[in-house]
Image (cartoon, rainbow, N blue to C red):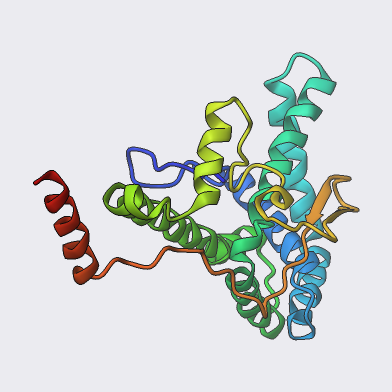
Length: 252
């Protein structure tokens, strides 16, 4: 998969960048919705309970936010349908961002902590609560992006140093690069259908959001299983000396 690059300010170029206040509220609501549908273990029940209460208690404010966003999209489009398509596309990317499977465990933990606070002290100001908690919901994904980018860098360094002798450290990564070179579209983390970023998307589906009519991706993740990259063993100094010696003797 491709990781969102960083802009000149060091921030990732994602769908959650440079939001207006109304967009912040709506993206926050969307992220919480994704958590309510994807964090399904019994211990995560407070996420769903708190989300339902948040929607009910802030119904009027959320409707005003939605109406203002609709006006913005209509003002930027030539037709009502064009505005609808533009907003649908944006909403889909927001849902896909929060449904990214590799960050699921940390995302659910963050949503659970937030939900417990919301149940203890129900928020009556949607914008204020979104401001206070949006970074907490998005942080697991940016952490994953940083970790994955570091993994790619270390893998490339290993290949440059030892690949000719031992083969590529990540055959799957090599295959992705070859596919990209051949014009095959590579999934973009945080934008593409999240089920395309995992090898076994069995059970992936979508649920219609009753408030917006949009499809919210639901991608099952087994939190008991940790994905472990396949790596080649690091050559020992003895092996390197032996290889170097063999090379020297052959030249002599």
